[in-house]
Image (cartoon, rainbow, N blue to C red; front, side):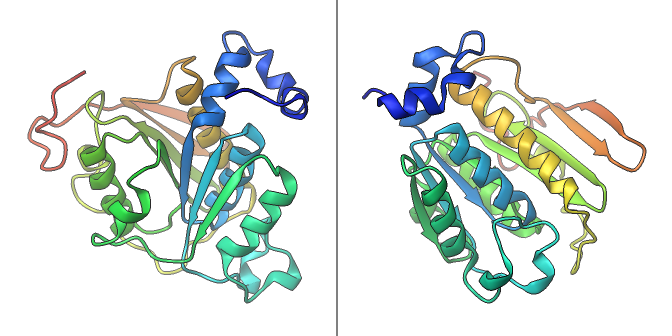
Length: 248
């Protein structure tokens, strides 16, 4: 596998980053990433994953665009309202970067289909707005040893951490009890844009194998007072999900 002349030019500026180069870009091209949930977070993280040049991108979401999505889901335009989210985003990403193979799955992740849908991906980005499905993804990622980049947003606040099974805490270590589900989450469009950008930065570092990941750390970002808080996290050796894994 190599890069075409067009790809070399498209990715030239990021390939100038120290320790990235051609080798790093080829690692990205060989990778398959999944974005589960293509709302405010996933819409933008999928765009930046396509810009990054990931070889294959799997989009999973069962919902259709609604008019109230337009303040944050920037790949949905007014004439897209009513259409399946993943189909609209697939069309726009393929037009934006034809070198990325985009697979659109208009379905909901459940215990009985997660392995079929996400069994062969290399990394999963959390674009969800509910904890039930996040914990399904967490269990799947631990089972398959797939890196999982979790992010969540509300209002002008957000959080992000990177989960690498066996190397740091899983989502169940961090949240032993499921946080309360909120039916309609208040949101400023810029908030998921910030967190989605950080998710893709983590994904890029992981795929290229540079920098320090947010493993064992979670960032809490508050746009209201422009503060960032970092909290150290630790594995729970008695975690029912990942407690059986050996540290690597």
